[in-house]
Length: 373
Image (cartoon, rainbow, N blue to C red; front, side, top):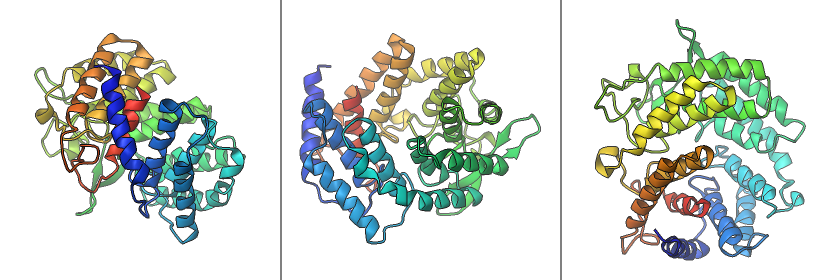
């Protein structure tokens, strides 16, 4: 598909976000920081600017005012750590001066305490708990206090894991917020694949390498034990663990749940630990996943990052960049084309609607996926 088609979609979304009303939610995934992230990349890539636009600065100022007015949600999805990650990301891109984000120094002790409280309460969730805040701290690793924060998080994470008879480890979490049901979740958005992803980042920073290698190996081995694939099956993994999937051996296609997100992290773990067996398994699953193209069967209802077609494209594009395998580039193109075709609603934002109406900023991440391509 020609890049002109992408550009038109990008321009349409830019027009919406330049003038949209700002909410009180300052988070990265469903808040104003997500809007600022897109606009900054639009300024950098489309407009070829080295600094952020006034609109982005206005959003950052809006977010600071929300915090000063008492906003205390701390998660990366909906709160302060998501905003903090955005600020550090823009600084590393050279689009913000360090002096502009010095206010984060005053917020770090609060976020550290919330992160540890979450972990002690069993809430390791990436989007809504400790690992999301930990990801913010990874972006500030050069600050002298941060390695200590991350070491304590790692200690609490290890303490909360449940050893299994085969030497693996698993973590319990809430599976259903409405009912309070708990169990063992292997997904990327809310489950153990996100623990593995976080440990991979720690490996890359050489923090307590021996301990991290051990916990990462135990985690990945547990996840691999959850494979239920038989010839002819749709998926390799269930949505949760074997014991919590209520007889279902299948899962959706998306960044959030199922084979794609899990296998992507398995591949990353294989690379950092130089484990060829894991790498071969990851590629086997990913090749299978690249052939899952039916929208209805695979649960693709919108173009969002979390559970939609742009998210699938984004993961396969990352895989193509890191492996050079042409199949992953072809799969990226397929899902981008699918995403473009979803711009079809006269009353949608730039023609798009999210499958879950409360997930209002799926449009932002759909756009960012196009820009990063």
